[in-house]
Length: 378
Image (tube, rainbow, N blue to C red; front, side, top):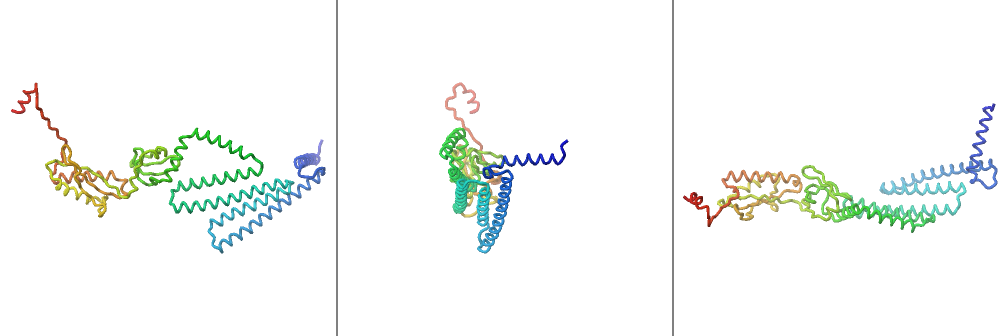
């Protein structure tokens, strides 16, 4: 029977031999197994001490950076960027120092250091580009969606250049990778033509800005308020709270009527009176209706009017012109209904007839209908 001590000794020997076989490359050639484990342990302790030293150095440098930022009144965002850059540099140096303890060649370490340096440079370039883009877009007053799009484009360009540069440091065939990605991009472009068309149209709408979020527009035969402008669709909410998502390609190619862009909106309410009635009297009856409505503007530039528009087939057609503010466009049908109802009551109160279509029939030769015609004549 095997004793408990003998069993534990056997397990330890198997574990020791497995460690020697797995970690033997870290020790010199021909080194005894005990010396290899001792050397590995020493390197692990040194690596641990290096990590502690770098962590302590990072903590001290962060305190110095934050103190200097407070004294010099550096913006918190900039201090945060510098802190992230410092963390990146310290982490890189710590990894290089630790890996150097395990026999990594100087050539490999040099390539890693060069790639990391390029990454730092591209990161700094991205931060500068983001700051310049933010200032430029703020001055230009661009839409938030367009600002986000430009920011993403800059990020993609910087990341692509950084990846290509880093891959080149390790001997990767960058030209072959780029060629393969180009072929894949062409295939994806053919497969997603509608999506790309909507995307490009969305960018065009965000740049030209024929309307903004909150504007009342007429798009593709739909009248509503613009709720969202994305890179693929434009969402419009009608007065009946019906949400419509219209593809940007259809929006860009159609006629866009912006009801809010010009400020106050003028309503045209037609009213017909009989030919025997006086248009002046009708105007005097209709003007109080326009003046009494709370949503109709009454200033000098937007004074309401009643004009004779045309002489119709059976009526004299007047038109009531009333201006409403941009904030009233949402209830424009209600205002129009109030004016029509008020006009009907005002004309009835003034005794002015609102005609209906009349038709007079003149019969010159009524062959076969003489008896009927004579009856009406007689």
